[in-house]
Amino acid sequence: MVRRLRPVLLLVLSMIMALPAAAAAEEKTKGAPASSQDGAVKLAPSARSAILMDADSGTIIFEKNSHDRLPPASITKIMTMLLVMEALDEGRIKLTDKVTTSEYAASMGGSQIFLEAGEEMTVEDLLKGVAIASGNDASVALAEKIAGTEQEFVRLMNEKAQQLGLKNTHFVNVNGLPAENHYTSAYDIAVMSRELLKHTEITKYTGLYQDYLRKDTDRPFWLVNTNKLVRFYAGADGLKTGYTSEAKFCLSATAKRDNFRVIAVVMGEPDTKTRNAEVAQMFDYAFAMYTNVPIYKEGDTIGTVRIAKGEVPRLELKARHPYSVLMKKGANMKDIRHELRLDEPVKAPVKAGQKIGKVIVYQGANVLAEFDVEAPENVGRANWWTLFKRTCAELIA
Image (cartoon, rainbow, N blue to C red; front, side):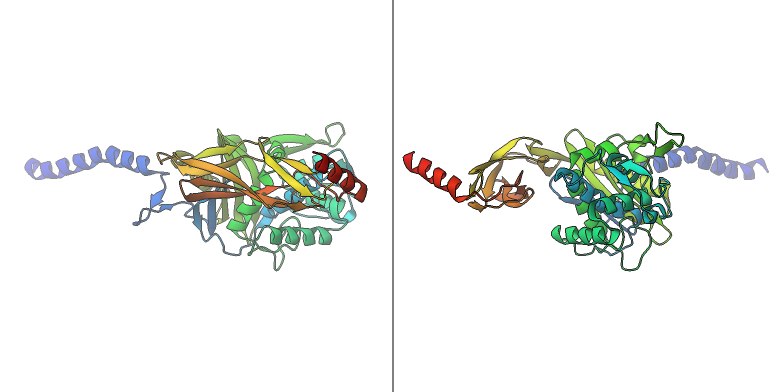
């Protein structure tokens, strides 16, 4: 009997001894991005749609169904915040401006900061309410401040989408509450996010994990960021979460390490845990495999441009945001150069933000990236007397 049991016991013991090794092997591969047979990395397996993009150059690192039209839920607010930041830059509103809440804005359901009709709050506090707590009411209040009505603001959102070349986006409201014909794509969201991040001060709000509204009243309101990655992932500082039963769990996230910033978008995730884990893995992959080569830092002088018949004859051009090119770690980084190509002469009047040329980055004879160069300020058309004096001065010179 003992002899018969001995082989069985040996088999059982060998299986028990093999368990730690199997567990170790499973732990080793757990969380690692899968690869297909052609070697392409497989990220965000649970997402309906996803994209991973270098924020500076717009280079796509990974994408999955990135042009599919899907309901975006509160990721809609990325475009809302973009128009708010543009209005601030153009001086149409100020952070300290008071906004009176309409009955319509106060009636919004879903995520909110519980504005009451007639309540006054500053633009900055409303922006916090949108960026941190995803306030639907705060979004409408800001839209009405800038455009008078939500409908007019939505028109501006769709106009901006066209300007950015977004082919799979159409907005019906400013906050992403379920509505027919309200859709966008992971790629379009990444482009919006990249444009929003050009306003570098936005991460002052989207990167906050918590804050308070109505601090000096008997109704203080604690804001906690719906994007938990800003607390738990090193370098994460935005941008926007979203959820509806139709859209499932969505996120447009950004993280920066050293001078390298990436954008990750996922749509249609099954739950928040999966969503956050898959975005963190996308970040891990980008930071492990890629780096960037700086071309200009924010604020660096790029060059000057001649303004034909302008109130000023020339404009100094400065980098409004970082310019860099994405490279795989270990790749040859020699012979990288860049040139400024301007659409001269630029004729007045010129609007701030108007595209007036490009920075083109080469490696040898190959073009690595192209960046639009924008006018830093408005330039009106000079009157005849100014032009006459300028002509005389040029003749004398």
